[in-house]
Every structure is written in structure tokens, then in C-alpha cells.
Length: 333
Image 1 (tube, one colour):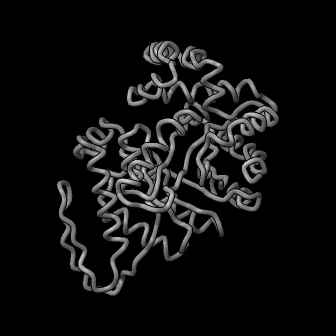
Image 2 (cartoon, helix red, strand yellow):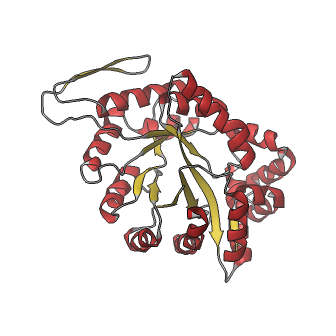
Image 3 (cartoon, one colour):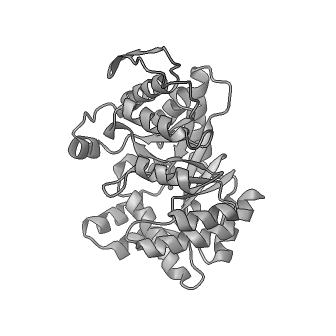
């Protein structure tokens, strides 16, 4: 497995890549753009895999996703991957102003159209006729050439995970994923999708791990990890995950605290069991011990050791990212 981290900026990335970090990822939000960051990642790294994990699938057309990847591939051939996520219903409807219904079917077509653009050879006509997209592009310019850039889908629940295996090259796991959720829910669903599509290669697995390491203030690191877990679990999309683990009572408490704006109570509602199953945090020694116990419960190909972001400053996130480099040898071993 490659040890990855979210993009920390050029200066930290240079040190991180020399230390053995094998992948960097970026994403989309209102104050940062996945592809602008990816352009910086391409020029600021030499060997590592780089890509969005994730880009909002419906914030751009399939053409826009493919064009960005095609241009960046010229500078980093063989190092790119494209991770897509559907985003929440209200984000698509209220932020992007795009149709928000049937995200699983819609993202499956999105992947197919992106591939049509990426796989085009010079002289090819790019054609696609589906329920959501109709493409009939005759590009009379020698700008193409088939590109095999892996496309992964953020798959949390079973239907999206199966779609990742069926139409994608693999899955990107959420920071909440536990050993049980990977092994009992996500991997079987991805494999069902891959088998149904007749794929013979094992689907790729990328995944996030909430990581907060601070030898000087381990209690704060643990509190930040708890608060990040709580913030994620305010989303009802993850209710099947909650029920699978029998965590309904603490999740109800943290959601009540969230509605009241009590972030300390949110963190306190996250039980020790939830923290142990989900996060890697505390002192360096504690984090190393936790990771050793969890090496069979994280993504098989790339794991992104991600600092908590909810109510955590950029400076502290950068410190957590640098501290996580002490874990690389465990992943390598």
C-alpha cells in the first residue's frame, strides 16, 4: 500500500515525497478547486501518484473532467488518477444548480462519457447516447490518443460501491470506514459490481484515515479526531453504517449536540470504541500502535492519512500532516 496524504503545499510535499509519501490527493470545496490544486501537485512532485479524491462529479461536465486530466497527463504521464464523488443532494441542487436526483445512475454515465473522451484516438468521433448525456463530437484536430487514467468513485453505501466496481476502476473509501465496513460491506459490493461487468483485475482501493498525531498535545489531537468523526456522522446518508455497528445512541447524542451548536458535546458523544475503530490519533507511539492493529482494515492500494479539518486551523492541519510521516515505515512494512 502507498502512504498518501492530502496535498499539503509544495514545501511540505517536497519533504514528504523524499520521506516516502507515494500519493497526494486533493478535492473540491467552495474555497479550493480540485484541478487547480492538481496542476500544482503535478509540478510540485516527481514520482508520487496525484489526483482528486474527490472532485465533485456533477459540478463539471464529463468533457471538463476529461480535458483537465488530458492536459495534466502530458506533464505527469502514468501518475494521475481521477476520483469522483456525487456530493450531497442539496449541494448539487443548491450550490451547482444541477439535477440532483438518481446520483448513482447519473455518475455511472458520467464515468462512461469521461472514458469516451479519454480513450479517443485521433480521428475518432466521440459518441455517447444515454439517459443523461448525449454526445456527438467530431473533433477535427490531432489532439487525442488513448489515455488509461484510473477512474475511482467515492463509494460509501452498497449501491455506489457496486457501481464503483462495475463502471469504475475502483473505490475511494471514506474516513469513517472501519475494518468491518470494508470487509463486510464495501469490498463485497465492489466485487459484485466488478464481476457483473466481467472485470478480471482486482478493483483499486484508495481510502482516507482520520489521523491526528501530536506528542506535545495528544489530548487535543484526540479531541480533534473525535470532533471530525462526529461532524461526519451528522449526515443521515451514513445511517446504514451507524446501524451496522450498533452506534445509534451515541450518534443521536452527537446530532443533538450539533443542532445545539455544542461542538464539545459532539466530540464527547463519540465513544472510545468508535474512536479506536475509525481514527489513528494521540501521541506518535499511540498512533503507531493503532495503525499496527489496523493494517488489515484500510485501503489495499493507497491510504490517505488525513488530518481532521472540522474546526482545525490550517497551521494545525499542516502540523498533523508532518507528524503523520512517522507512520510511513509501518505502512511500508
